[in-house]
Length: 97
Image (cartoon, rainbow, N blue to C red; front, side, top):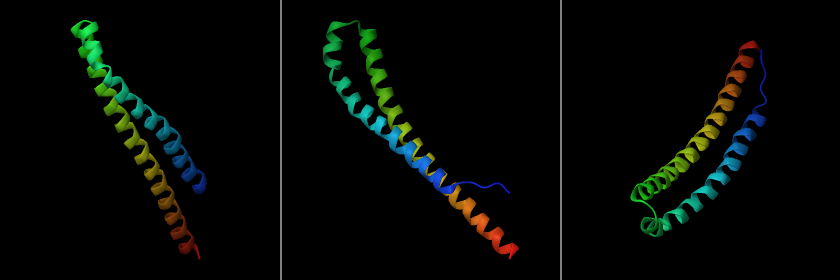
């Protein structure tokens, strides 16, 4: 029967969420700064570039938030998988005794 290192998988999920989460939090703090540039960009570039810039900053804001939720969900799913594996392992051990 294969064995897993549940503690290692739990740490992996925590590490991914923490490390990627920190990067996403930092990115989420920078994106609003780009939005403050909108007014000056509208007067100094072609309208199509200003619109593209506005759409790109809006997209990035949504993408960063979605990615943060995805990695949080991944961590929760890894933890649940470890728990399910441990529960199944315990149940099998009880059946054998």
